[in-house]
Image (tube, rainbow, N blue to C red):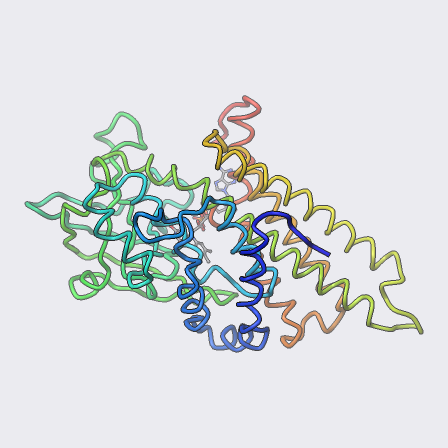
Length: 385
Ligand SMILES: Cc1cc2nc3c(=O)[nH]c(=O)nc-3n(C[C@H](O)[C@H](O)[C@H](O)COP(=O)(O)OP(=O)(O)OC[C@H]3O[C@@H](n4cnc5c(N)ncnc54)[C@H](O)[C@@H]3O)c2cc1C
């Protein structure tokens, strides 16, 4: 029903891998709020998490569309790539802006899966979406930076060896542009945990290994500064298009899984002597969700095409993320409604997917901020924030 033309070989192989991780697997982890270590190990082993790392560093060196295909298929099989999707793209900050020494030190190990680089510390409790207001400070002291502050929603921090951290290196009142004076540091969390860093898990409505991270005078070697001091905001921004496109692909996968479940149940469930799917009141919402998923899928393809061609894709990446998150959210609602009371029963996995895909209305960027971006940068309306 949902054949996608691109990267068919990869898609088929990922589908096969996911057969080993059926609904029962994800359901058990969800109940225990446990990390899918076996699934992540299988993806690592198969090389999918190194798919974007250039061959010279031991990765597959494939384009973004291949990574999107992997993540879409995981979701379309009922799994949840959020446990490790960042291992695919967080390394992009090092690849694009790191020094030759940093690339040589980290990328081969990330590609081999012996080093996990999947924690990304940007959001803070006090600043919200306004990244330029972050308060975590990194103060230069000899050969180190001394980091003090707090991050929130730092996902996978307990399952990562390194963190890409955004911190202020020059106080906001001493820079002419508020986005200046921010810097990116690679934090070795194994060392930091023994020297002032604390990680506290946050229990959320879905199984997402997210945390708060506290820095109390944590020393980070100055050689771990990525690029130039003070230009970190640009480095973080430059990775956002890839992240948005990949998460949009995941939402398309979620929508496919949910629509498939809804259609299958509508055919099989008999009420008043006939399949509920014979009623337009049941079939039309599923058909509408399908149409909206396909439209979102086209925007994801457009964003991938522009990204791979090296063209500006900021608006397409944002639109793809918004439309795909809307499509998966709609499909989740429709799937629950189609299942009636059983939509709420854990054994159908529909309520789990409903909870999981709801996140993407908010993270990694919330819908309002995408609309604000389009209003300002595409439509030329006044900046509203
Ligand atoms: C499970 C989870 C995992 C996450 N993982 C990570 C991670 O690994 N690393 C990381 O750095 N961050 C992570 N995040 C943070 C995520 O990116 C933010 O939650 C998200 O960007 C929204 O920021 P906020 O929560 O501070 O909301 P706020 O900025 O407080 O906004 C609250 C609401 O107000 C709206 N709003 C705010 N300003 C405006 C405005 N000017 N106009 C209209 N509406 C506005 C927003 O759209 C939102 O709906 C994660 C979040 C969650 C929930």
